Length: 290
Ligand SMILES: Cc1cc2nc3c(=O)[nH]c(=O)nc-3n(C[C@H](O)[C@H](O)[C@H](O)COP(=O)(O)OP(=O)(O)OC[C@H]3O[C@@H](n4cnc5c(N)ncnc54)[C@H](O)[C@@H]3O)c2cc1C
Image (cartoon, rainbow, N blue to C red; front, side, top):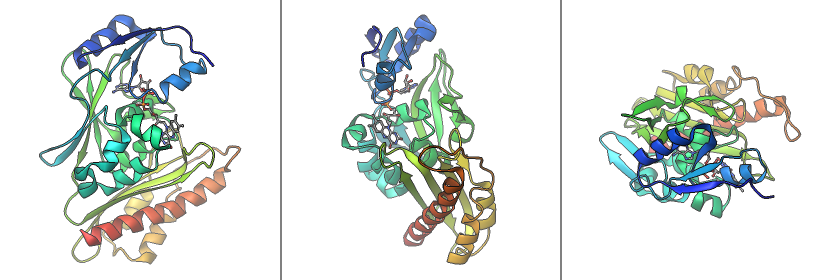
């Protein structure tokens, strides 16, 4: 498997990358970790004439605190997300997700920005970042704009990002006191990609009732899907096992998954209920310990 021939240019700033994207138009692609783009080129599913390397752009890698927000550079690899003390302390659900992506090589090369921009329906980060109410900073030709995760994932491999924009940062608001986050995934046994996954952010009041619930599901559509009925069912109720189970039972209500050779639509809906319950339970447990 060989890709079609292509040119390569290393960008040295985000501005330069945007300029190069604008100059080369549809014929160009940004290169981050290359773990999705290069295989797609080898399979001739993508044949960009020019690759613009982001790895040479300084300042796009790392995790920092910015007021009440955790800011993660787009070029931060999964292993660095998982081992970040800031992420471990404030967003363990993100550590859950970063730790189960692919294998060690993928986690050392794959970037959080590449995962978001690629918008694979079987990807992990889009799901947990939707649950965490993250937003994505995009740099067009001038200025920058920020798009909420809820509005970012449009369709299979399609996002709200324009062809000449660079995703520079992922911003995750720090959960309120009394919150817990968690992510669980049923991986495909061959590829490791998501069959079904669930991410949860739960805020627990001192009384034990639910002040806030955000739950997102993977594997049931073209991208992450909010489990709105589950969230509504939890709101204001005591976070008992019975309430959580009843709320999780509604997780797949708004979804219309497609069956495939590995899992039927009915099986995916069932797994979504089970995994939603597990994600909420884990988030509640962390909220109780916080
Ligand atoms: C063996 C294997 C197993 C995997 N398993 C999983 C898994 O279990 N879960 C999972 O979620 N993923 C999995 N992946 C996919 C992996 O996470 C990819 O690396 C990821 O989808 C893309 O990240 P990347 O940094 O490699 O991006 P690249 O492959 O470099 O780029 C992907 C796309 O995003 C665009 N892009 C990249 N960065 C930016 C940016 N900053 N701004 C704008 N556009 C950008 C590129 O132009 C390209 O179109 C697996 C991959 C492999 C090879």
